Length: 295
Image (cartoon, rainbow, N blue to C red; front, side, top):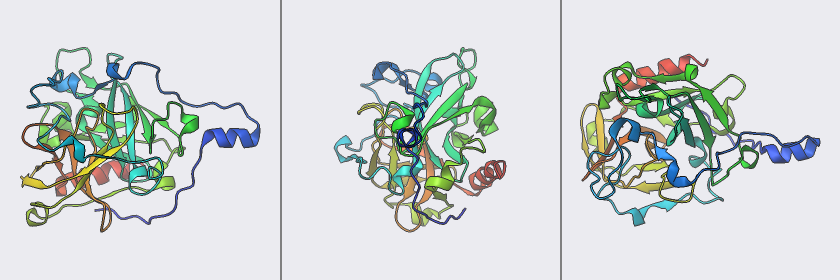
């Protein structure tokens, strides 16, 4: 597990900075396309979502009630831990646009689902690492970087990492990866990051973590959270009765109290339970290896 010192972030709204300097406002923009055309990146690996049969769907629904979800409001989104969770706009290898979620684990490292980094669908035009990912921390419906409290960062393929057992074999137990931010954009220094840890089975079983991310079936670019029970654990996966939806692939499953420590990386929607990659010692070692690349 890594440790951090929590500090109050310095917001860098580019519109305010531009106005103060007299410069023309510039920045990244979210594409003006209908929301229904932005599909969860998992569809390229697992297939198109069947709304009436949620079994084996990427980031899909579970038996949990969607009414229990809570939106992170505009007043909360810049607070910890919500500001450390990022909306993703993913450009796949075939040029199509997709959605996902990631979260900061160091100044320049984010973790997400492996299928947000690399599509596993041999023979398809999208198979392999995606072209680029637009990282949008603490997003609350903004369509332009100049309206973001912390700015956006676009990351190219060369700075994306994924576990080889996912990239080459599509093994769900290794469905996780990392986004390495450029030196000039250490978002985690500004807004902080989540810790991650290897918890005992007895601690996880029947505990109540939070899962927070950016689902596709709500207002574009808004973050939603829910807390519910972990119902089953294996050495490599955690199964929970938390409602999720497409777009939340890569979301943290974490305990907000007591250090904001993540226990899993959300990757798969199913009935009756959703699941994520368990953060065991092997995952910790790999995440720390990716963090080391940015130091």
